[in-house]
Length: 357
Image (cartoon, rainbow, N blue to C red; front, side):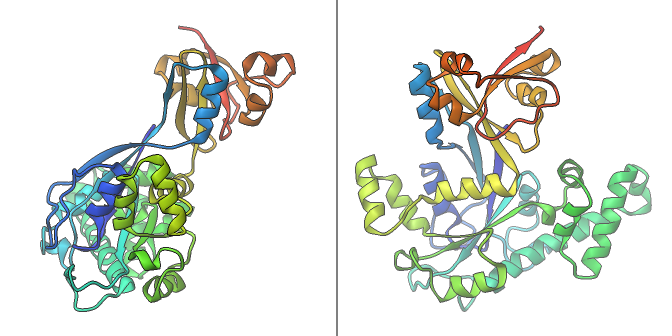
């Protein structure tokens, strides 16, 4: 499976610049005027994982195949978008198609890049976006709960919508619904505000290491757990460098990891995702699964027939595979286990599936 993150925010906060940096492309138009992005841009990015290279070296694999993540650059929203202002609620609908929302927030001063509001205020800007998403959810819920439409909704979804309506009317965060319903149920609801969120504070080069007054104000309210401080411009510059130059430049500006790596780490965490591997002479490959995924379901990521005909999974941890220099020694030293249908795959497991066709 691959997961999809939508980049949202007000116009001119750096969404398209970040998208181009993350996807190492110039697919998204970045310009100094509002609404330069109209149709959403989509970029698929390989997820970097040093474990793949280590496994491939031991297995003498001909190919290395990373798992992927998709980024979607969604047009800038403005106050009143849910009522058709700016580019209207058409673009709110694009958010429904993503697994997680990256809120891009302007945390830098610039006389050269115009701002849709008279001042820089990251908290206000986020509240504008979240209010528009909430109003879009409210309109959607009210329409679906109308008498003529209500009869077409199953009991489970009806309960979610009724509780969500109550929460909105009482100014409660719809994220609380995650404590009452599972991810699949909430995804089926189509509600925007139940999607996991990552906050990206876009700063200038001088603020990368320690942030600035805007990031400090934002973090004091929303916390550090789902907040990243990134410079979209710097990420773009890094992508234009070769590996050695990239490393030296990052050291010079005290940047330990790229924005892409940080976003992927946050994304995996908030979406409860793990990675398992398959490794042999032909290829070493990474596979993305949800946490608490059973072995048959993990096998189904490779092919549906693997899940249907699942018998057992030869399993070895990443640490044991590396320590024992591959499959043969891992088996000789008793580190390979045969796991059945109830086995919950762990992050870093290397698996070889046995199945009937």
